[in-house]
Image (cartoon, rainbow, N blue to C red; front, top):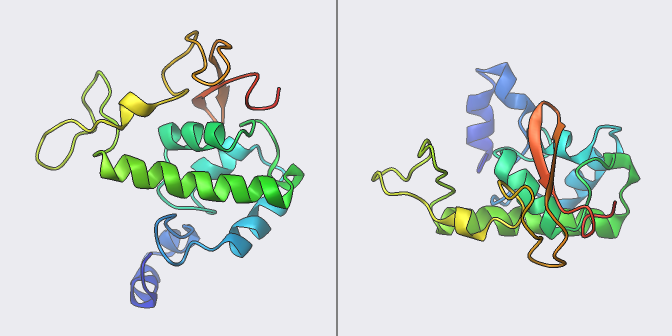
Length: 162
């Protein structure tokens, strides 16, 4: 939500008021993000997917940001230290900026493509998403997959603090 005029337009659709700021916008500020984390008992993956802390973070990008921040998707928001929250905040911005630059992630079903019909290429940089059983690019431990908030969740059991 880039501007206050956009915010006013959202008042016409109350459900949209529940969305957090987009991580690549100026409205995405650490203090509010940190307060949202500290106030929740939900697992980090669930918090990211519900869109209240940050709008537009989907399943792939939640997994990749949590991996880059070296945080377990199962940790509760309120358990994070400020330094860990800073890592996640930065990782979200970095992952989404890279994905945008590379046209997103186009998987084998080709569901997500760029507006011109060309595939994105961020999937070439996935460290954990869709890599179940393959070695972690950092430590070599096989990537695991479990369900969190009804979604497949990919993670490195070693790098992400298990």
